[in-house]
Length: 511
Image (tube, rainbow, N blue to C red; front, side):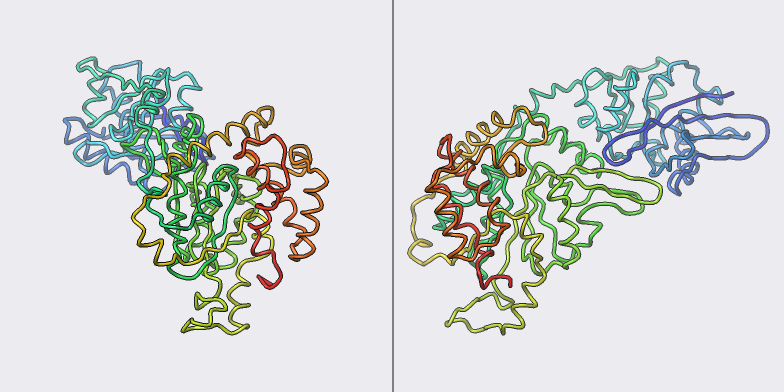
C-alpha cells in the first residue's frame, strides 16, 4: 500500500514542503531515499522503539520511503513523526484518509514522546500558503507556530495523541493564539536603564541620536570609562518593535531553535559575540546553512566589544551586509539569503594598553604598537560607521552624586517621535525606514543646507582634516539631530553637532 504524508524542510528562513511517500510491499528491508542525512537514516531505530512502546510495530516487510523533492537535501531528526505516521497508515495499523491534509513534524523519543524542532514558524507559514488543513508538531513549539492565523496548529506530547486523533478516539484541540493581543500585552522593555549611568551626558546624547536615526556607532575610551555599560543600555531607548519586525525577528530565531516556549519575540535582540568568533559564526553559512550573529541581531543591536581584538578578516566580511542589510551565502549547490538589518555598536580602547597620550598612565604604547593595533580596523569598515565618540572616565563628583539621571523611557519617547517623522518621510520607499539607510540621492533631497551651514561644513572639513567619506555621514547624522529638534530643515547648529561625532576621521587617528 502506498501512502503520502507531508513534512517540511527549512532552507534559509523559508520552508519547502517535503512529500514523504511510504510504500509497503512483499519482501523484507527498510529503504530510505531522497537525500536524507544521517539523523534521518537513524530514524528507523527511534521509530521502531517508539511504536513498540505504544503497542504498534514496524511491519516485517519491504518498506520503501521516498522524500520528495529527491534532489533537495533533508536534514535533522524532525521527520521522525512524519515517517512513523506514514508507516502506520501504509501498514494498515491506522485507518484514515485524512493524514495527507496535515503537515506532521517532530522528533521521537524511544517512549513515543516528542522533542522540539527548529523552524516551526516558517513551516507553519508555508503550510498555510499551500492550503494545508493543519500542522502537528511538538507541544514545546506550538506557541511560535500558532502565530500563523487560519491554520489549525496542534501541540502533541506523545505519538499516541496523534494516532488517537486520526482514529477519532481522542480530542486534540488546536492552539489559539491572538498575535496582536499577545504582542501588545507582553510588550516590556530591557532591564538595563540609562538612569543607572552617572554623568556621561554627551555620550547619552550621542546614543539618543544613534537610536533615533539607526546609525552605527563606535565608542573609544580607556578601560573603565563605561563603554560596555552604555552599549548594553542602548536597546532600552530604541523604539518598540512593530508587529512586522517582531514576526521577521521571530522567524530567524525560530530557524535556529531559540524560540520554543516564548512565542512571538517582542524585544529587540542584543547580540554580543566574543572576539574569537569565526567568519561563518558571524555572517552565517556552514555545511548546513544557519543564520549568523548579524542575522540574529536583525532589527536589534550587534555589539562588538574591543573591536581591534577581532580578526581583521572577520570584520571585513561585515562590510557588504552593513551596506545591503542582508547577507547572501553562496555555495556550489545552493544560495540562501538572510536579513541582517541591525545597528552596529562597537567599542575600543584608543591603544593596546588602553591609555592614549596619558602622562599619568602606567603603560604607554609605542607608535609601532599603536599602528599594528589600529590597522585591524579598515577604512571601508569605518566608512560604514556614522558616529565616532570619545568616552572619558567619570569624575568622582559625578559618581558619588545621588541624583537619578534621565530614565530610558523619557529618552525613548523622543527617539520614537523622531522615528515617526522618518517613517512618514520615507513612506513611499519600502527599503528605507530611517535616516541611516538613506542613499546619496535621498541625502541630496532631504538634507538641503543653507549657505552658512555649507560654509561651516567646508571650514570644518578643511581645518579638522576630515576625510571625504565623512561628508555624507555628517549630513545623515545632522538630519537625525534636526528630527529630534522637530525641525524641517537642517541648520548650522545641527551640522556643528554632527561634526563633533567624527573623531576617527581627524588627522592622527587611524593613519
